[in-house]
Image 1 (cartoon, helix red, strand yellow):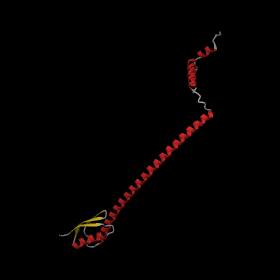
Image 2 (tube, rainbow, N blue to C red):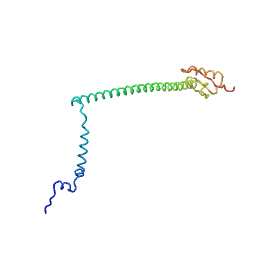
Image 3 (cartoon, one colour):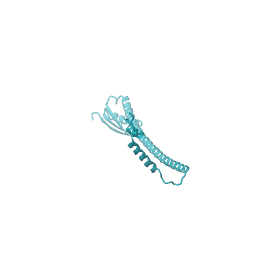
Image 4 (cartoon, one colour):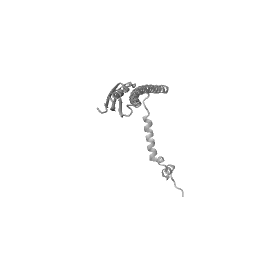
Length: 174
């Protein structure tokens, strides 16, 4: 039994046909394509293809030049900020080094004074407290005689770096 179906009807009726091949979808796609193509019809500006390419290249070069200027400016700003930060770090590190050096000097002064007192036979038996701040020395404790008290001050004054001596040593029995 032969059926009389036209090829178009056979196409429409074929089961399992992809969605995009259905007649309604094809009709919609064709309409959209024609609309898009008609929108591309800009009025002619009487420029040749070569002139249009040259204009596009010129715009690209201008954009590249502007980008270069902005980049160079950003690099200059970053470089300036980096130099400024480096200077601040240098100043800060110098300040820290000076403070550490001052503390080290105070510790050295205190150690040298205590070492000299320990070498003195009369003073070594007594506990004396020596504190140093920025080169100024404060000595506290008990000495057996006023001569020993004066010798403590003399020893402290002789140490390098000492700027002042506050002798608060008390003579024993006074």
